Amino acid sequence: MPRWLKLYLSVTGPLALVALAMPGLVVFGLFLLIIPGLILGFAPTAFLWGCIFAALRWLGARWLAERWRTPAALVATIALLIAFPTISILEARERAALYDLPDRIPAAPIRPTGDIRLESRLPRWDNPNRNLLGFRPYSCDNLCLALLFEPGVRSVTVNSSARLSHGEITDGIGRLDGYSRTYRLLPKGQCAMPLDPDLVGRDGLYGTTPEENRAIAAYWALRLGNDVCLAGETARTGWDVLIRSGEWTSGAPFPNPWSLSPQPAVARYFEVRDRRGPLARRFEVSVRALSLPFVIASMGGLENFRFGWGFGTIGANLNDGRSPDGPLDHVLRFSPIPARSEFLPMLRTSLQAALADPDRGREDAVFASLKGYLDALKGAPLPSADRALLLALVREPRVATVDQAYQLRDLFADDLPALRAAIVVRLLALPISGDSRTQSLGNTLSGWPDAAFTTLSADEARLLRDPDRRTRAAGLIKRLADQGGAAVPLLLEIAQTHRQRRNIVMDPDQERSRPEADDNAVDAARIALCLIGSAARSALPALELLTPTGGGFEKMDWDRMMLRLGKPLTRIEKPESLSGTTESYRRNLADWQARFDPARSCGRL
Image 1 (tube, rainbow, N blue to C red):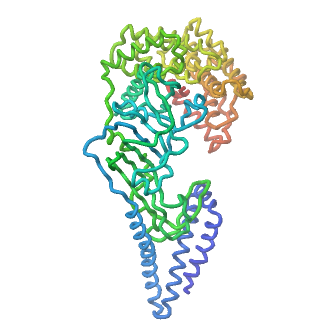
Image 2 (cartoon, rainbow, N blue to C red; image 1 turned 120 degrees about the vertical axis):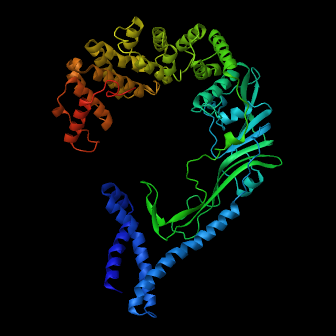
Image 3 (cartoon, rainbow, N blue to C red; image 1 turned 60 degrees about the horizontal axis):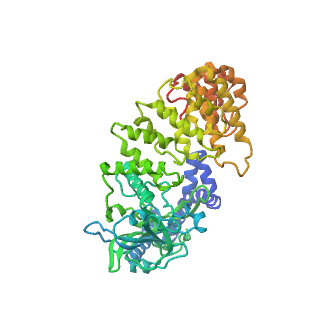
């Protein structure tokens, strides 16, 4: 064996052993200095290739002269590193073809009718109705509700597709599990136990814009509040149309990383079928085979970093972030909601009736249509009837939250005092343990015109004196900056009170969101003091005692405020959790102060 080859193996061998035995060192090397991590990460492959080359050169010594051994071994090594994975790749292609199913593209969008079976890999749990039902089945989410509102659809049964076999997917069969549930829309008053649809975080399904999605959700809320109710029952076994999406694998989801065989086939699929067979289908299959060339690769994340044979993907890329049910809006046809000219009067009448009826509770579906109502009012002068209705809705405690509250400022651009008064009345009327979702309504006040809060109303002053309710009025606390130095005593009291409350261990029966609410109040006071600047210098000694001890960025925001008030830069220390030196930290603070912009520099709520 040549001397240079011995040296190569004696260097790469120990490095490969270290990397394979302690893969965490590779991660550490990448974080510390990139080059050491890259060297350690490649060492196992380098040693493997060297061993193959050395073995082939040794075998060639029996038939080849010395001068031909090295080039012959090099060519043979390259050929072997390509040929060996090629066998795996061909086998992977056969496996992918074995499990693939033909795609089917419908000539026109499909209109669902009858009894629908809706299956997905991870159906949402019915958390909104868990206490009412006493158990937690699969929920009726926005797709379920969209189907139920289609003329001709009688029911939707929600089920899981997680444990289906390839044969069951092919034949469109499969059993219900213990969490399956059938949902129907019944005339209002006929539901023995009316249910809430599961629309948390989702505003509709088939709109082309966020506004259109909110309009769909508002239309559903309008219907649920006035003429229909959602009912659940034991899951029915029969169906007329099956809408199924999910993922499937032919073997263990986490195969042995040192196996030389192709990994199990994985498929992502979506299908709509009736009793006669598939109407629409997209089936994507992927199999991982040994990569070209043959290597030892790293895999996993920080918590499970490891090595194994390098693999490449044959077939579809299933790591593209797409959902299996992505084609829904192209395959299914849904009836359009009424036009804006029809829809707006319907919303207005429904909301007025709900406000006038004291029996309509806080969670009544009609109040959820407020988002769509706000969208429908955009782009036109606000009629007086809608102005009065909006103010009543803002003041109404039964309206749990006012989403898109920022739209209110635009709608009331010529009458902001009336909106301001209504918001304050609403915040004052909230119980101490009120819903934290009203935070956005209080934050809206921060966007009022300059100097709007130089003088406070009696209600605003009363709200700011109430430690329990002012946590939802962060926008008002921030706008105390309009008063300059006169607001410093109140801002200091707010910061002290809520910092202290934040650090108290809470009683389990108290409002669970209070720590976050207290943080919001302190942050709003910090922003106001930062905007006031040197006129609040008298508060420096007291604020020094409130310096955060937590995260680095929280302390950095606090240090910026203290610098604005007049604290010497030389007395500011860098948070330990931030990188760099104290000198560089102080330079960054000085640069921030030199480029100070009242609109951005102190932060936003």
